[in-house]
Length: 139
Image 1 (cartoon, rainbow, N blue to C red):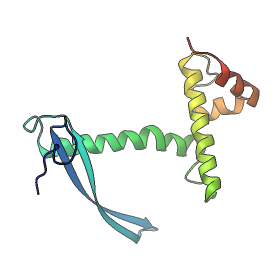
Image 2: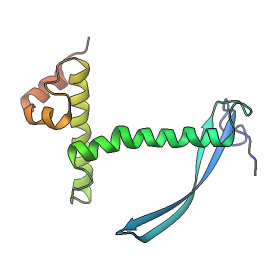
Image 3: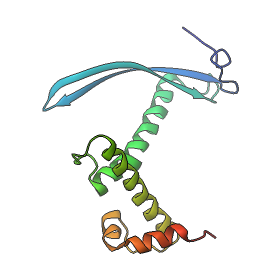
Image 4: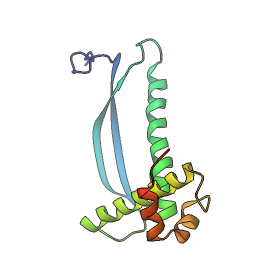
């Protein structure tokens, strides 16, 4: 079924894209959960500018960048996936991990980071230094 972006309430978009996803959650090679869903995207690209396979590549690239950029760093640098913390405590830890990565990036952007990667930097950062960094005014 075709729907124009205006009909969907997305004025200014040239394309409205629906992607059908089928997921399988595996544990030790066995499927333990399956799900199916539509994901919707809006694009400002002209209809004839890119074909469906190119649009699918853009969408995969977006999610790949998210996985590599944020989730991978959080897991590898801070061991998030190995954490056994659940419930509200997991949300608190996620906030603290985001704060840690944010402080690291802030100090790195200012040329003040004492290490090139998060675990090395984290071992050297103290609470007092973190508070000073948060209070410091940007240029």
